[in-house]
Amino acid sequence: MKNRGCMSAGTIGIALLVIAAVLFFWGKNGYNTFTTKEQNVNTKWSNVETVYQKRANLIPNLERTVKSYSQFEQETLTQVVEARAKATSMTIDPTNMTEADMAKFQAAQGELSGALSRLMAVVESYPNLKADQQYINFQREYTAIENSIRSETVYYNEAAQDYNTTIKTFPNNILANFTNFKEKPYFKAAAGAEKAPEVFTN
Image 1: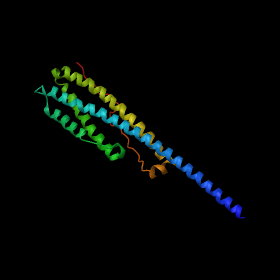
Image 2: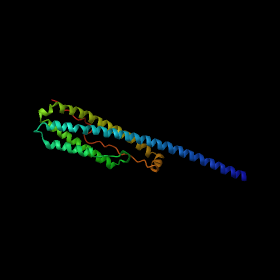
Image 3: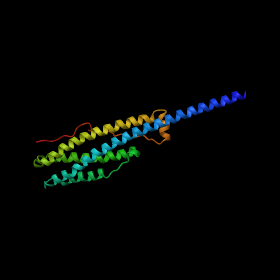
Image 4: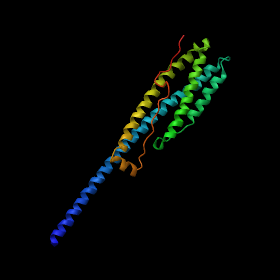
């Protein structure tokens, strides 16, 4: 009886060690997977910020070009400059980004998009400015960057979806909650976002 008790205790001990080892390796692999996927999301977010910054960097040259035409409506240009300042002043930490942060970021960038669209519509009434080589160059770069913005936001959303699905799937959700891995917000398509910006030509 004594030997049987010792064997039983030993068997239980071995079983507990096996369970502990399984849990350890599952937790380790799960944590590493979450970390890798989160880093991918952060990289995609960095790419998004880069293309938006490229767009913002076009504004000073556009401002100088437009200002050279003294009769141009300065109010429209001022709106673009102010929207740029607001958009570039936003800093977001992708590791702690919330739905509210994403909404504010998109709102600021959307305001700049709207201001630029209004400015380019007004330029149509100024043939000389419309034909200015500097302005034509701006339009080409702007169109290319807007296309990049659409691509990079899609890539970000894909990475975020992959990450979110992983941490929300059982039993990963238990480990994710325990290790404080949180869901990432998505870019939401704005009205007309599927349409490429027009480049007006003579």
